[in-house]
Image (cartoon, rainbow, N blue to C red; front, side, top):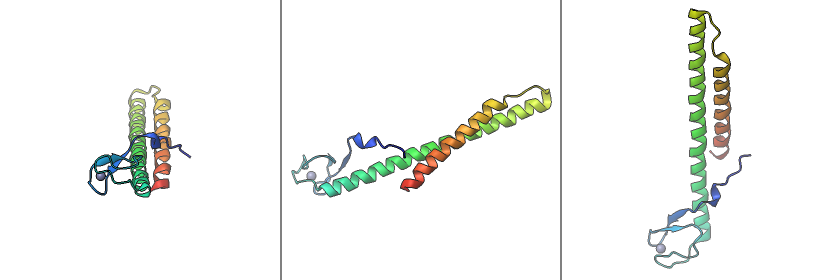
Length: 116
Ligand SMILES: [Zn+2]
């Protein structure tokens, strides 16, 4: 469901002939002049996009976990305050953090699983 906009970025891949880095949309290698195999460059581009997306979704998952743990710490902390001081803690805020952490994680996980 996530729209991938990273296709717009300029990508490079290694020329199979001279091993220099050329852009994937080049007609021919600007170093040795051989025509670029469109299928090979497209395949390389797809592979790079996939890897970038994996990294992106992993970032969402780890970010979600970190956020969840912060929220959890907040709950424990506010529970401790409540236990010792008998004042109302900050449950709402930290539960909110935990919920966003879970949402963030599941977004990352779903995207990651789709392309894994
Ligand atoms: Zn070349």
